[in-house]
Image (cartoon, rainbow, N blue to C red; front, side, top):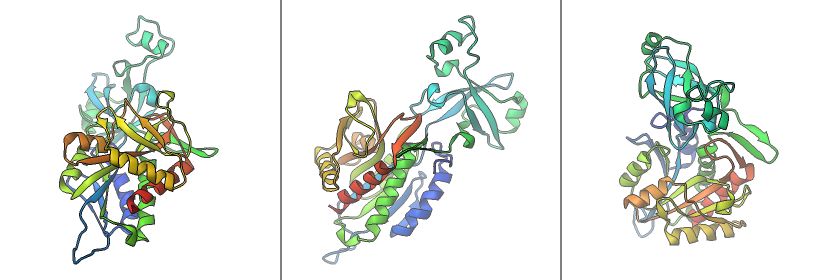
Length: 341
């Protein structure tokens, strides 16, 4: 999943990988009109009912932070903007894939030389390390007509090259770009696998929605929430490790009490904390000011009345991210415990 490209609204490679696993464990799996991958585990029917009320919507997102072409310069270089909350320093000067309509072309994200002075437009910013997207250009070594023939235009998406995506092992951790949200996808799949073998423990139907465009607009999650019969939404996320939030890179999962869109539902937050404790962990409860999730977007929109967020502690969010192997397993275990209850 880390090596598969999954930019917003074009997450087909990641979706296909997830569908192969989710299809093993759910009663039904489909892709909806927004591109979300949806699977449902149905609770045992009682009293002649065919479907239990009060279904829960569990969400992890398929997409990743990326870039988009703002304009094509006469010399064939590209100006780009961010898709999602990412700064140039998160990627660095690195190889990219430019996803033209007719061809995918290689490129290099460039800040310019480190040997420039303030006389160069981006020189002072680069020297200070305060690089903005206005300082960035993308080298293609193609002419403007060649780029046009490949279908490269304003709005063309640009993603980190496959050469830059492989994870490394770091003792008890894994590090790579796009652990957000591949690690939560894996934790959600593991929870679905665990619950598939013990459906009798489910009190309500559970819908798993692997959503599109979370990093840009939460559009996929909002579509799913409006079209699925659920009353509670749970986002499975990466949680930032930062002293200001009191969070640490450890196995104990983060339970998000509130984020930039407002507080999560107290009853759901308390239930997630309880599930963490019953699973043998000491949850890290955090108020994340510069953070949002599919669940908080849904709650803020008024589509669903209750929501919570369970997160895997992650160093370097939106950069070269580090998660503990056991942190993924812990998240899966706490999620399964919550859903059983």
